[in-house]
Length: 141
Image (cartoon, rainbow, N blue to C red; front, side, top):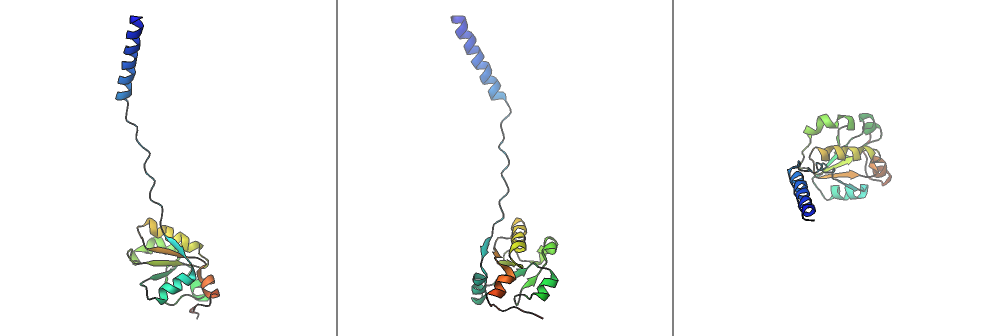
């Protein structure tokens, strides 16, 4: 019996020694922070503009859409395919409302800008279609 106890203790000590000498387990790398922005309605955008908020309205449609379908007065046009190369034209500390035809490309623009470190972003749901349907002013040629 004494030999069995001695063997058990020796085996336990060996297992403990092996476990302590094993390479430390590393946690999986943390996922990068998710792009952060909110989505607002065209009426919320209009109210913010009417209140005089220092807000850049960033239109990410094509130049043809911007001209043919009209645009919001004072909007800055940077088509979505050009955005990665033209982000340097934007102030990362300024509130930006991303705008497109319906809200899909502007959501992508918000994702890209947030990944680049922009923090004051909103996606305008419904885009120029909703803006026009609400009867808000649209600049047309």
